[in-house]
Length: 91
Image 1 (spheres, rainbow, N blue to C red):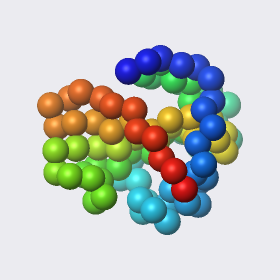
Image 2 (image 1 turned 135 degrees about the vertical axis):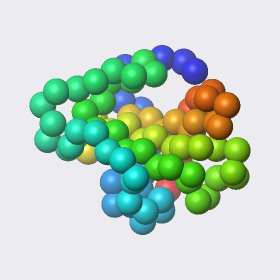
Image 3 (image 1 turned 90 degrees about the horizontal axis):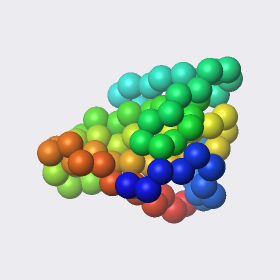
């Protein structure tokens, strides 16, 4: 996976993410979190984790959405064997 610290231009917002994927199983941070983390080469202040995403085949264990304030930085899906793959989300 290519590392990037810049916010990408995804056409999905927070409300769309909730409508499409439901409520995340686990979160870290918040839209107003002053601290940020870096993971997978991404800078973010909020992370949403979906366990066994209902719209993906059973080989995928998780989907992680990385947010920086109101902007989606990236989506990553995690295979059951542990490898991670960037996912493009269109509206």
